Image (cartoon, rainbow, N blue to C red; front, side, top):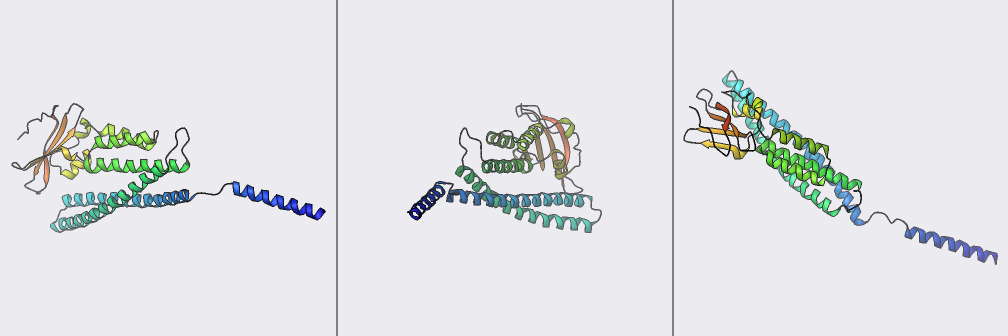
Length: 273
C-alpha cells in the first residue's frame, strides 16, 4: 500500500513539473528570431557602408591633392602625370559612388522596415533593439544630410533632415551638433568670404567656401562667365564669385569677388568689367 502511495506521489510531482515547464517562458518566437537576424544583418551592412563612405572621402581628398599638383606643376610632364591621376581617381570615385548609392538604398529600406516591424508602444520605454535601430536611423540621416551639404551645398534640405531626425530621436547629441553647425554655416560670413582671392580656381574657392548650392550657379555663355552665389541672409542677400577662363592656364578662375552681390529680393549687383 505504501509503494502505491509513493508511486502516486512521484507521478503527481512529475505531472506538476511538466505543467510548470509548459507554462513557463517558451523562448523567442519565429518573428522575434527573424527580427534579431535582420538586426544583425543591418549592423553588418552599416559597418560596410561606413567603410565605403570613408574610402570615398579619402578618394575625394586624393582628387583635391591631384588638382593642386596639376595647378602647381612646373613641367609639362608633371602636369600630364597629375591629370592622369585625376582621371583615374575620378573613375574610382564614380564607381564607388554608384556602389554606395545602391547599398544605401537597400540599407535604408531594410532599416525602415525593421523599425516598422518593431514599433514602440506608447507609454513604455523602448527596448534595447528599438533604441539601437533608432540610433542607426539617426546615423543614416546624418550621412544623408551631409551628402546634401557636401555635394549640393543645400543647407536648407540638410536642416530639414536633422529636424525630422530629432522628432524620432530627440536628444541625439550628434544630430543636434550637426544641426547647429548647418544653421551656423547656412549663410556666408564676410570674414570667410574675404579669404577668396582673384585668380583662384573653382576647386580652390570651393575649398574655402564649401560647395555652392547647385541652384545658385549662373552661367552666361555669351560672355563665357560662370557665377557662384552664396546666401548671406534670410532676406535673399548673396555674395558672389564670378569665374572666366584664364588665357594663361585655360582654367576657370575668379576675376570678380563681391560680398554684397545681391542686396536682397533677388536684385543682383551689376558685374564689373
